[in-house]
Image 1 (tube, rainbow, N blue to C red):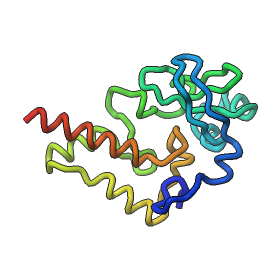
Image 2 (tube, one colour):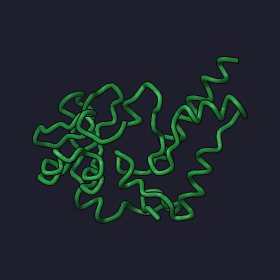
Image 3 (tube, rainbow, N blue to C red):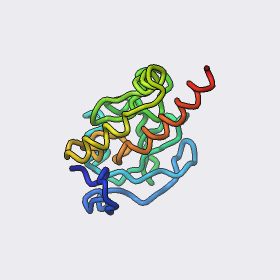
Length: 165
């Protein structure tokens, strides 16, 4: 099971801590970044950027409107064009990925809430985590558990759907 999604309060894995950089601000949007483990970077970037991510520690930019995905303290910025998959926090058009381990999208949340009035996706993810079936530290571009993003999306979508009625 992935430590980042552990249902118990556990510290981040040592490997993630040792290969991630200190928090620094994104050179494009000036917002603080989140340190990302090297194994996450290697899985996420296109092959031509593998040497770049070997050289230094990087951070993830959480700003939705910023083109930067990863950056380091030396001014190197990797954008959406430099990564292998869509970055859910930075997308506005379907499919907007929410869960990279099990393939849940924002559209799936919308459809379930419209059909049933609620969403079971967070519980389904939690069950998979308990079964040892997640790898967020590698699959999620943020290098961390997706449940926070999924829960936020469920809350946001629920408000929108209720307002439509």
